[in-house]
Length: 266
Image 1 (cartoon, rainbow, N blue to C red):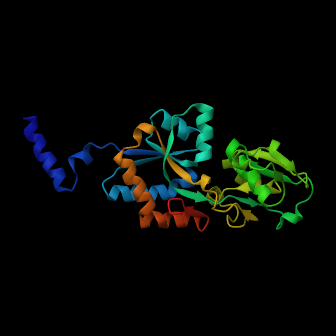
Image 2 (cartoon, rainbow, N blue to C red; image 1 turned 120 degrees about the vertical axis):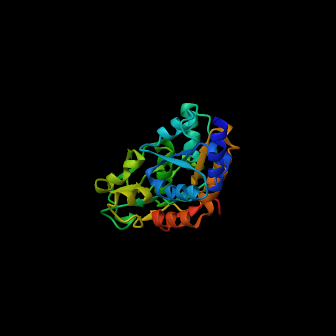
Image 3 (tube, helix red, strand yellow; image 1 turned 120 degrees about the horizontal axis):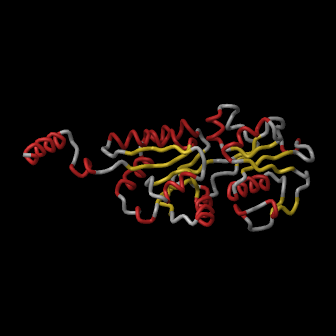
């Protein structure tokens, strides 16, 4: 009797364009942070139109997305570049790998008080990120600006101990990266992330005295997974939508303006 009732129901659903595989397929769970959520929402909507159900989970910090992924609570996360991932793996023993590239964002040096680096006074306060990787990116920016010199070859692993020259005797203050936008009012110079600046809507994200450029491919944001998920067809479908959907590209342009580049194109 149950089989007789089941067959017409399946036939009806198939007539609506849904395959039996799609009916049994659980939603793909993606973890992210606020800076990347809006374009991902556009991708989720486009995926739904194509019969792929995706659940977007937004985290408020840069630790929980990897904890949740490593424990299997989500299928993939999208918020970090490879240096950040490698540091997190070394610190916590996560078994996670990059799956596919997303976008790369500019990071800049901003000042509410000064229009030129030359105008910074001796002893000026500079706020940079406090995590080991993004603080290195901030120090690289200061070196690019000519404000400090670093030991040769340290790259994104630079720490304050690698500063070999600081002629203006800058006072470097380390702040949680997502809170740097709030330091704009207090510090003389601040490392800024345009996506978070736009979310805060407190000053012009394009007004940096200097951007770090898009040539640093190590900073491309990655879709990150557990190794056993590498052949999940849902991942391939969703990444293809994110990378090639005109609706997603429009959402990226709206969210990031000109301050990003598609990491899969370069």
